[in-house]
Length: 89
Image (tube, rainbow, N blue to C red):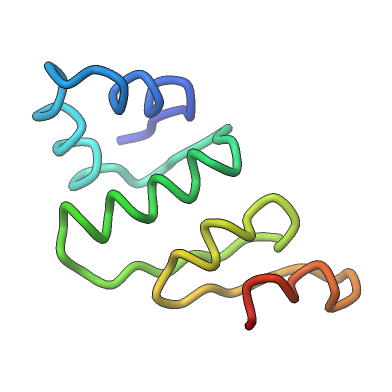
C-alpha cells in the first residue's frame, strides 16, 4: 500500500477515518511526498498505534523531525555533518 502526504494528512484530520488510518499504518509500505511535519507525525503515529520501535532513514535536511522522533534514525546525506547534527544531541 502506498499513500501520499496529502492523503495521510487528510486521514489524520478526519476522526471518522480512524480505522482507515489504522489500516494504512499497518499495511503501508510507501509514504511519499510528505512534508517534514507529516514525516514526524507518521513516525509518532506508528510508535503510538503499533506499539513498536520505528526506524527512519533520510537525507537529514527535511527529515530531522522524523529522524529525531524515530527510535533509530539514519542520515544518508553526503553533505557535511552539520545538516544531521540537530537530531544527534
